[in-house]
Length: 323
Length: 146
Image (cartoon, rainbow over all chains, first blue to last red; front, side, top):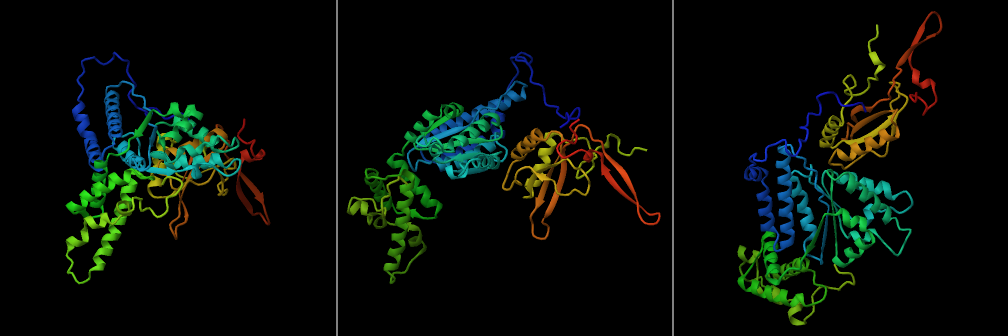
């Protein structure tokens, strides 16, 4: 390529630290309003229950990006901050849900251009024979550019027991792009805490290139009930007051049983309650139904669960791997 | 009279303009991506106008959202073939169209010797004309090296 024609790159030259007087006024509030960040944060607060550390971190990132934009406006250098993240936490704590939001949030903040989310697992990155991995990984990276690359169960990428595994090659390419094209894409790794810790131990380079390690805490029982209410609202159902109390009991009992997966268990429980509700409505054909019957989950729909009668979760077959 | 000083190859879009900058290339790619066209990178060192099918540098890129990925491939191709012609094509797969919608050069050799007009005397006093690229006198891969 020849050099760009004269006058084409008229970017303001970053001035020295003291070129702008120290007393230059800065309108942070206006910048904040213009960016509509508050909308995004409010939406996050509304739609995601709990997750304190996650929200705090997102707010911090938003603040940093805003300040950077103001600095750029004054001609101060503002290097693109590294926003690669690692989400760790137990099953069902909302890692994927937050990752989905991240694309939109970062787009609003002007950090990524498109804000789409590309979700991949080991299969999409690692090839099956020599020379297959690099093109495959690059393909995925190209697709994710301008948005967020979400690598679910990232610890499967590296299999220490098999030294000829191609996962290492994939990690190498990932690292290179994460380092060199920081402004083009954001990589989010997700996985269970202990396994991710082991993964980072064997890949120290990966750990140090990720600026934000965010741990997703388990939900408290009342948070889970709030989540259930939100989920039902989305599906246009609601709890009767009795049902809500029954569900709170259900959650407390269910949390003590094996294979509890936070919000995911809540969703499954609600799906089963809807089944029972439909069945209940069918079982009494003589009664005239009204719309309220169709949308209300009653206490009996919840109390029929085996959690109450037998003290076992009514998941059909508990699988060895935590779902 | 020399109509094309510098012997710059004029094929595809924008070829009479100064070379596009990376930013301009990105903007053009973005336009193609917005139309859901598959963008591909191709190269050749045989610039004859009838040489339609150039070598592909990797696969055409489907499902991309952002030009950065394609620009990356373009730059890789430039690094591999600094003295070849490189063009970006955008293929429209809409039924009934199924042909390239865009095609423009993103890299040229440093020296473009251009084309000569070759005359062939055929039967009678007829003369057949053809263009001949000076560069193709050398074997493939060695053209444009010096």
